[in-house]
Length: 499
Image 1: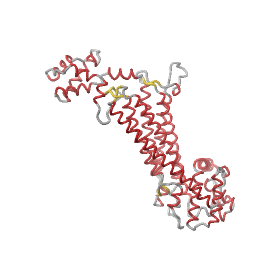
Image 2: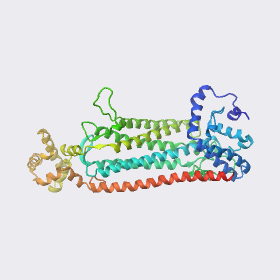
Image 3: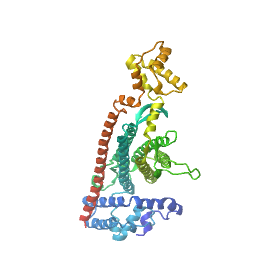
């Protein structure tokens, strides 16, 4: 049979040149790069299943598997673009050219390109998704390492970008690691929906042959099947799951980059970025620009765009198979994966190289009234006045100190009593030692030993808990990778027995 007839069926004309240039040729080479191995494995699994179900004779299965196993050895370059303009059809034509249409043409029995492409796309995304999760695990480990090294490093905590209350650098990094932990779990949940096999759904209504969908799913290392045949070819919600989880991950990493950009300014002076992660100015020789952090923030926007692209594409598509579903959705997932992976890698490297100006952090935490909530709490505890009343008194104290150009360390019992008298008509006689305990950042942090607080003992507990969760994530990652590798090994072993 001529190549054109095989490829085009009842259609008499070849595809228009612009269609080939803008659609079929780019998609062909993308499939050749990303999907070849997976399509070949699907073909092997499908042929094995057809033979086991007596749909395909053993001698025919042997001939087909012989060609497929030759391709498995790394001979995919032998498959070249043909008149089909579609990778799978050209692959099928190559097989037919080797063993004839009467045998090679039987491989497609009980199957459609619709369920085939849906299966290959899912298979292709499993490994890079796990690789990204692995990168996220490494980044979280870096953050926990920084936290362990800075349990005692005092810094101002911020709300509204204003000094709020003292925390530690360790508390900050443990907090951000908690966010990345949730991002990791979202990605793992996305993997669960990705790891379902649509093969056997046919075009949308299944097939008339007694195929075994569970057998092909097992041979390909899937964790289960998508039962409804229409759902199997119509749905790409796993792509939305992945893109959504990636967008939230990129968002958390962008917020980290924003904090580090601020901390790197002369005004903050908290960190120094290593020369390997900075660039200078073409005109201003004094400059050391944190361009890597700026790229991390910018790349996050691209990941958001990928998610919006997916939602916009899918929302107006009928619930069935179509080329917008099969051809236009998945590229956005790949781009989001690649972009988020680069943000993770850049963030890990940069964090490892940071130098922290711990004296500067500690001085700012003490100097700009970030301990005033503790002075309020001390009045409530020691003198039994209401929190709101104490809040009014301390607000007057802060206003006075700022007007007089004084620091928190200059607050005395006399000043407290004077401002209390103006507020409630009497002094409260707070002891000098209670005032000084309230003003020391280390003491403020130590008192916050509640669950999740910045006190060193509690931060150390959270670090150990996070380490255990990291080990669990790594173990799940290892199991998934082993499942895929073992399935691939068994698939090839089973095929080899036919030869």
